[in-house]
Length: 115
Picture 1: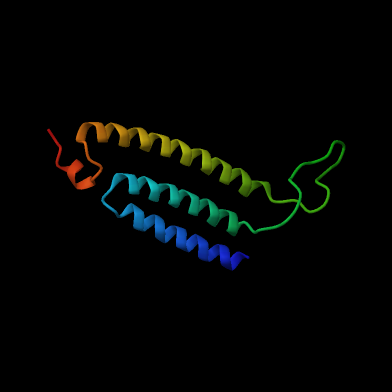
Picture 2: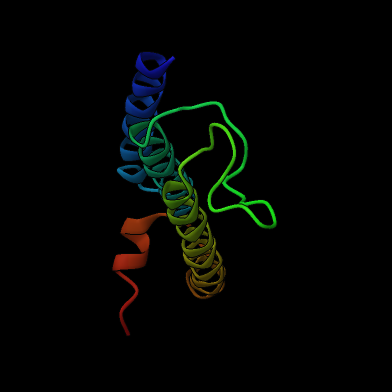
């Protein structure tokens, strides 16, 4: 399963870079979303894919019972998802304002609008 995930991460990174190199600002944001998701999937795959219970410690026990997943990659990926959502929200607002001013989503046209 991990080699398949590695190929999927590579495809997602390639698609993200391709989308970010396009001239449309909407495609740039789609590439940004793909890039953040590919990075999260890469970290998830690198941490090791194990089947187990959530890393919860029962009442009165010294440690978790049975096989559990590592909580650190879960916490880091969750933090990365929240940060990516914040960046995406900021980028969408910035794109909306830029489109209102320039009336185009082409990055070359936005470059020539200095007044």
